[in-house]
Structure formats: structure tokens, C-alpha cells
Length: 214
Image (cartoon, rainbow, N blue to C red):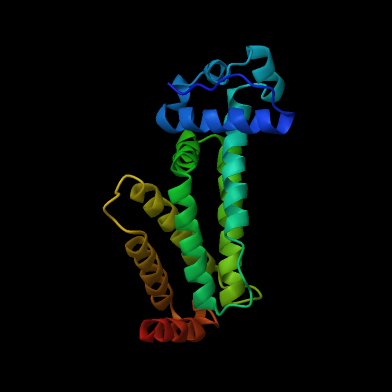
């Protein structure tokens, strides 16, 4: 059981503490079995204070998921000064580093998807749209072909699920997961028909060739 000693905290610190404890609980316990009163007990605060910050379990879980996806969005902010392949590789590496530092948050996010709750699903969909738009902006610019959008969106889902499984496979290195993700991305793009391929595909492949020569 996770417990903390009771100390006086600012509202922001208390909210963060409750979310940290809730992240541990939700990542290891099925949603229906979690009682947020347990979080209050773990934090050494009253139930009334807990409900002051979060009016119910659904709101608390939504806050957890939102905190995770917002942190991920900040961590993976692209550098437009880099070539497309380097932007992509850097984004994958930062994402995997984030997953490694926040395994419980990653598991919580997966549980949110499994819950089929509309609000949780929309928060995660927002994250995936953001990442997809960043990739498409680097590759194509303008309005991408619909099939390209589908391909990028589903690659993001592949990367998310792969990273989630990686948490439980410590023998697999970050570099192996990164190379798998990047190879899958290139394979998807090369498999697109000519009219759906991004304008930046040749530049992307050239970047891969240069990286391989280093």
C-alpha cells in the first residue's frame, strides 16, 4: 500500500500529490475496483478535501489521463529546424523516454482506452490528432491525402501499443523499440499508392540513408 505522511501543501501541490497517488492505484487496479476515498486515505487527507479537488472518480480519472497526455504533448514538441526523419526519430525517442519515466501513467492511459468512456477517449484522441498533425506537417504540409492521414494515425496507435507492451519487457532495449517503430513507419509510407505518398517521402528516405551511414 502506498501512503504518505500528512504535510501542509499548496492547492497545486496537493492536487499533484493526489494525482500521483491515483496514478499508482489506477495503473495496478481495475477501474471498477478503485475507490477514490482510498486515495484520500493514502494521502492522509479527509474525504471532504479529496472531493473538494475532484468531485468523483470519473473526474479524477479524467484529470489523470489529461495530465499524462498534456505532459506527453509538451515533451514531444517537434523542432521544425530538423529534417523530417530526424524530427520523427527524435519524437519517437522522447516518447519512449517519457514512457520509461512514467510507466504508471502509460498504463493508466491504456486503461482509459479500455474503459470506453467518451470523455477519456476524446482526451486520448486529441493527443493522437496532435501527434498525427505534427508528423503530417513535417512530411507533407497543406492538406494530406486521406489515406496518408489514416496511415499516420494507425502508426501512432501501433507506437502507443508497442510502448505499452515494452513496459513489461525489460529485456528489450529502447533502441530496439525505436528502430522497430521507425522501420514500421517507413514501411507503411512505402506501401502507399503513389498518389497518397507524402511529398516529403524522398527527403525522409534520404535522411534514413544518411543516418545509416553515420
